[in-house]
Image (tube, rainbow, N blue to C red; front, side, top):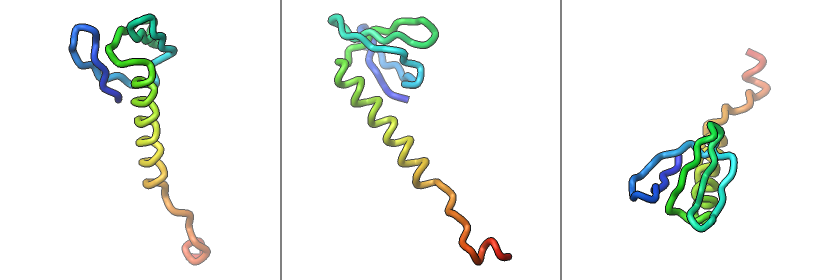
Length: 77
């Protein structure tokens, strides 16, 4: 989840997988897969940085929690 600020100052946590597209005209508008539109205070560049950071954190968790490949001796038993 990423934390964003609505135009009214309220925080919202959003799963970035739900974002179809984002537009900066002049407020950043997100169109979600549900068809809902969300206006946020973050700039388009800030939004992209948050999504990239989120994706990197997921990737790190997947890589660090990846089960090790069995060794030859493990397979023999």
